[in-house]
Length: 255
Image (cartoon, rainbow, N blue to C red):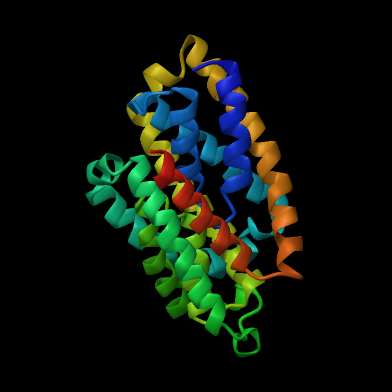
């Protein structure tokens, strides 16, 4: 991996982490086109620059990261538990699914799901407009929906947003709950991969590449969050559904 590769992957991660279009799927595709092997070190690198994007959430929502919001974080922890348990028990099986074909099909399936949900979605009936008002039951259901994100190409943001919309959150609250939910998820996965591969990642060129990708990912993600919320003030998730389907078909055409 070169500095150029690190910058490209950092940009892609920063843009896609919070959009419902699968950052992992885009990183896998980008790695293939850049000629990067999906070995353990590169996979761990991709996870750690995802954590950089998650830190952008802290900068965007500093007031949420205080003891005043312990009830909110209890709900987020409940939503985090399903993917933590399933991901830990089946980590090797999950990493074995990292292939372009699986990513392509999950892009298409996820896009269709978004179009179906938006077809029947009536925001006037979705009264949970603030993440502080999410119930413990809603949190659990969102967490169960997020399990699908373990399949590459599904999208962690996408699955949690869909889950939130289905249990009564409006679009903005669904996106914001997904942002906050990313924090414990990526803390856990980053810590796990860093513990396993710290000797390879934190030495020489790998360390420089990691730092470059980390900084780029953080900056781009910070801007992406703000633009995404502005977008949702006037538009739905239909565009993302269409993009997912088109991108998935394009991948199937060329693999």
